[in-house]
Length: 607
Image 1 (cartoon, one colour):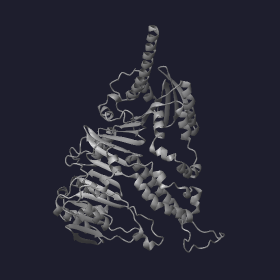
Image 2 (cartoon, one colour; image 1 turned 45 degrees about the vertical axis):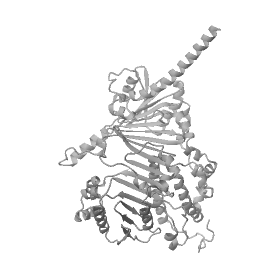
Image 3 (cartoon, one colour; image 1 turned 135 degrees about the horizontal axis):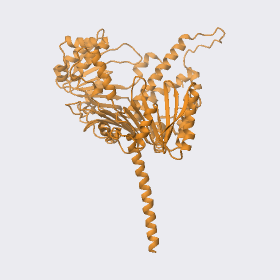
Image 4 (spheres, one colour; image 1 turned 90 degrees about the vertical axis):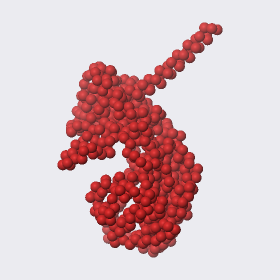
């Protein structure tokens, strides 16, 4: 009986030792990736575990939204009209190798070509990996005629070199690793570091001080990580500035030159995506505290809120220098100078905190088909900008100078309950805009119409608001550390529901008058807003200074920077589509043999 007990204990210890060794080896291999790279590395990206990231992605809110039956039904037609990208097949093949610790790095930049290296740890034999990687290599040879291929031997490794001037790709195995580089010499140096033959063990990236500062802010369970050393770019920028300026200012540096390192990571957290961006640099703000005082202006209809430290007095000199790029801006600064307004006046007039809010009324409805009724019937988002007022007299002087600088415009001034209002009537458009500035002894509020500005002035006297008391806002705010210089909040569910109510009728009307749209998408199957919004949570962002740099965190179904990138892409696609449509319309001419169509006198069947 005692022998059986000892045997069970021995088996348990061996199993635990095997489990511990496997997990320790995985952690060591992840940490050692930076030891494969030279200290001079400019950019480094790392994906620790492809399979884990794939599984976490499939549990995310955005993927669950994509898998909704109504969404799948709506996307079926546009997806069927799109060619299947080859990358999907490549990813499926890559899953067979269960890649871990995949990395990509830019090690140097020269006038001829940059040096790039990369690789990943694979599961299985080298032959298993070659069955997948060999296809990629063959595709490269097929797509580039005149490509030469050769094999080199180096320290027991076989290096496959594919050369198509000026491009070179060298690949090799060091099981369980696969490595690739655009430079054979760089690949050999990488193998020397991996096999511990390198004499410069202290000249690796993991020994670099800036890199060690950056990874101190890297979470342990991230899905992706990147590191950027801006020194190579800042040195070139400084050399260019010195060549342009005949008398460079002593000690003058740009923001890029102040940065020691830039690092970012992304991970999944309870179905949401969390990004962390670290900027290793000295603290810029010397004064001011972010207290989010403009939060009192928020309502239950507020879908966007932002607060940030912005010392306008310190920025005036920079803006004045940049004003030469725009005649209108240059004219504005000239008028400020004529009125005797200097940077010290801005510093004395306003506080450091800039606030921004956007509301969208819940009673929003689509305007009538009569264009004359459009401005009065439509309810569109209202945007507010705020600044704390420190000295009323100087603030009034600045606002008055601003209104005078707007040539050809008529600004009316009124006063109500000790608050001065400046309003300008814009030219008639589909949406009526009346820019309005309210100035009190406590706050400056600028908006797109006098009604929203006056309502905001009344709310500014309170100590709380519907927004700050809402459970949605409170729950989102608690998810991130307290900010010191930047905070933003976007209620994506509220925003989408308002967009759906406003744009759905327009899309359906467009489909009725332009049947060609139906060939690409079935707008009748557009999912209801309830299907979409149940997967949408607020996007919240926070920035603070932590020891040796700025840490910016963002959390939501997508993050703030991902949303910004997406909007930029959609904007560029929309611009290209409008240009293509304008070109096609301009060149269109009715065929002489075309059957005339009856004129549409009125939309009798509006969807």
